[in-house]
Length: 362
Ligand SMILES: [Zn+2]
Image (cartoon, rainbow, N blue to C red; front, side):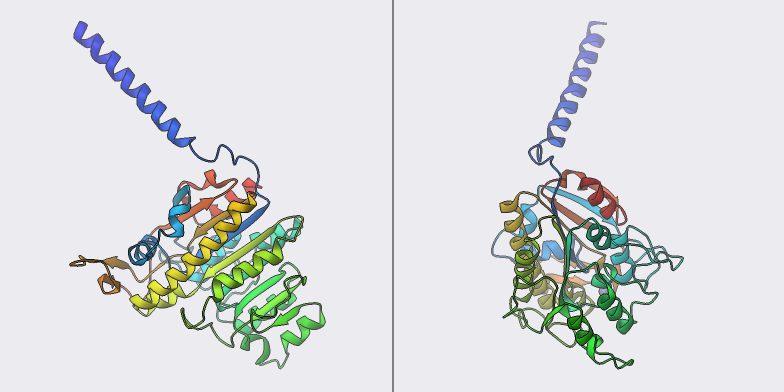
């Protein structure tokens, strides 16, 4: 009997102890950050799951930006039509909170246009921007501004960008979709006549202007390092411009070519693109740390390449990385959060929960 009582006291103590340990862990970070964020920066590594993140860690001389985030979670990426999503349905789920069919941009699976978080926050008076190293009309950036049944209708998507009164800053490639069009319309001329300030390089851009479009390439930007520090520099430029807004801003930054590298099963290209994205995240975190009112979310639309690492026989290099597919995989992708409201992004969530959770923090 005594033994029984002792055992039951011990087990109660164990339960109490483990409960108090868990609750300490749960409330450990971001007590000080329970205020609402003023600015939202959403960064999407196209094709970036944990193997890509770990590839960056294994080949980086410094601690990566990913290790600066206090909150991490995992995200399910399947689309309405497929277990393995493409960037159109993945981007649309993140941008609008709706699962849709592969190939569709900014529409639900019934082909009904749905508002993106960029549009919703613009209506609240926030400044908005989109940056990519691909065509600006490519699936992920397009999901935040355009509505189209087919991601390949680039000229129609460019027209949506030109017509949007919700986006204030655009930086990327894909100039040809604005100027070499079947309808003969020069969208850059149309946009500049309607108040946009157009540049074809980051240099000489007046960051004080209101509406800025920088299309630095006819097609996609060159790969890293050929394009130089385009992505971190564009992001710093955008932050300088958008942070002048008194009512806050929303910025989406895409590391577009992580996906391209993995489709090519090119480890060196992949690692270079990851290091460029990592460097860009560091710039964003430096801004957010100083600002104190900025929520930073880093995630991905899907994994590309079915990347894995084999026994390196020494230290890990690009040659230790193996791709199991030339396409996408259904792997969970990570989500990293920093700043006010970041505590809401832990655990396993659906890609459609991301914007719902962002909107709840505001
Ligand atoms: Zn892809």
